[in-house]
Length: 273
Image 1 (cartoon, rainbow, N blue to C red):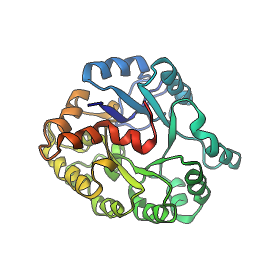
Image 2 (image 1 turned 180 degrees about the horizontal axis):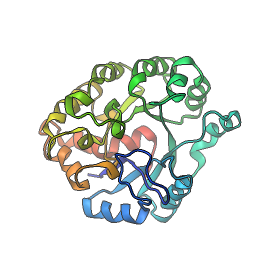
Image 3 (image 1 turned 90 degrees about the vertical axis):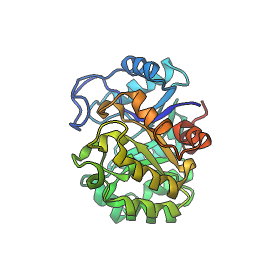
Image 4 (image 1 turned 30 degrees about the vertical axis):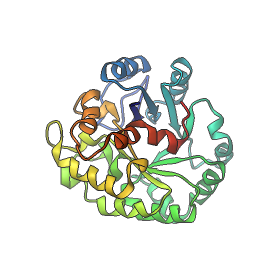
């Protein structure tokens, strides 16, 4: 079984703006590779963080230097009209699978609601560029986007929650789950179950979170459910993030695990390793 992490960050300068991440000025590819080897992670998808302006180049270097181990969900500024032409050739960049944006803050939160980004959904659907989204407050709007653009593959980040942007834990961090589960009716919407331990106020194996993982599994199925860590803000080791799914959720069959732990995300984002 291939273990593929659907989301990590690497950076070489600047402190993370999200305080949930390790407050260090660098988390390098070499550090990530060493931890992946120790934890049993075969590959990972890098999401270049905005706090390091050189993080995309760092991710591209990882793709070059470690063939098959890394791919990228990148981004470009959405408020510069000259950037709109980038979508059509976005996936021609080595290792670039798609786009990823956070929509928790203004003006991004308003743009997802008011039609400002209609051009993005149209262009990405046309170019077959998948988009990942951190958008807890906009799940209903995402449903409308998915319905209008059935050929656009959307992925909801971090169980639909706020990831490291909240200090709420367990049930209090998952009040959005009904809105997330409502998106399962759209076959072009998937969920990253990334960073589950970070939502828990309990110790490993984080039992209070199992109920929410099961609800997502029941609604979306293993083909639209992707394991991952966002490792630099996890309260446990990479290995424990893996075994939470492979050893502590007995209702997952071996076939389910193969999909959730890596095969499904590669298929969804078109990563031919």
